[in-house]
View 1 (cartoon, one colour):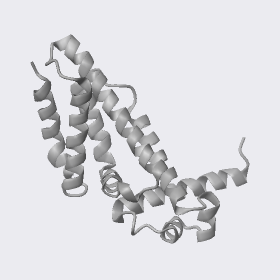
View 2: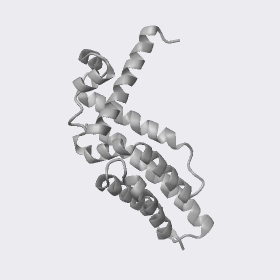
View 3: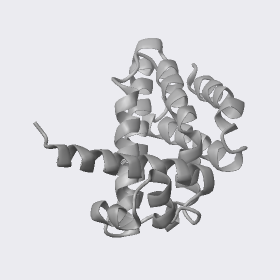
Length: 187
């Protein structure tokens, strides 16, 4: 059983990460200083540095936690391509502002944070590729490369996030992108 001190430390760490996610989603990386995160989380600046000695450490931990939470929230692979695309759209829409900021400002992220995003992208693509491959065999869909179908899906979603109205891109474009991919693969 964790001690009270360990519990407080875990709560402080989660408060820092949660606050940083909210601030980045709202204003981007440049507007999210460690001092601002600490203040908004109700902690001293020094307390933040106990958990994250450098801003880069905070950004890496935040991105890794976001990617892990995102993947966990997807659950097991969906039974069909259509269901998998819908599942991913729902998860992306729930975190649209943060996803958009992380994509738009990716080059400003430290290398471990960029790798966490790449890992999440690979996971999303693998799920779409597997769902398409299963549907292709089961439903006789077009003989396209599952990897290219997955890459097209991800590229279109990312484009919508980066070029759409922040927080409203997926409600506006998500259904149309899903329909396009489904029509693309149909026999």
